[in-house]
Image 1 (cartoon, helix red, strand yellow):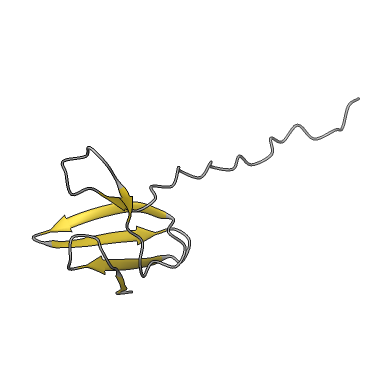
Image 2 (cartoon, one colour; image 1 turned 45 degrees about the horizontal axis):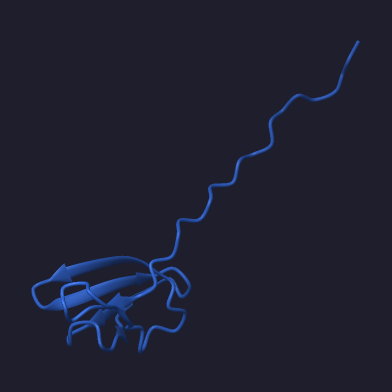
Length: 77
């Protein structure tokens, strides 16, 4: 009789790709890095609310805010 366990090992969810923070001032024809103030620059989401931008940073687990179209960022949480 075989008593070996057939339990499956837990699967690890792959990490989503990073969305490095970049900005364009010419409708996307060229891009520059815009992570001044974001420590790890490992942005996974960006939300716009009016003229403010919010970026979720995976590296720090924080939310950063920009009030100057993404030139600089400040940690909000």
